[in-house]
Length: 68
Picture (cartoon, rainbow, N blue to C red):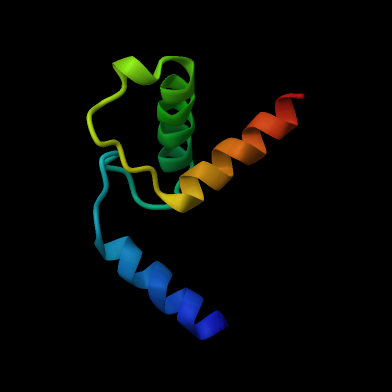
């Protein structure tokens, strides 16, 4: 399972997303936490067809629970 996860992360690293930052970097997490937060604050103003990476959603949820 670790090999599969490592291979997926390696593949994801070659792909780009809307953030333009290196996947899983601190700036990448900050960008997605901000974007997901903005989406939950006002979904109507969100970019059309926003696709959030699963790891970004997990980071948002972790950051949200730390604030409570």
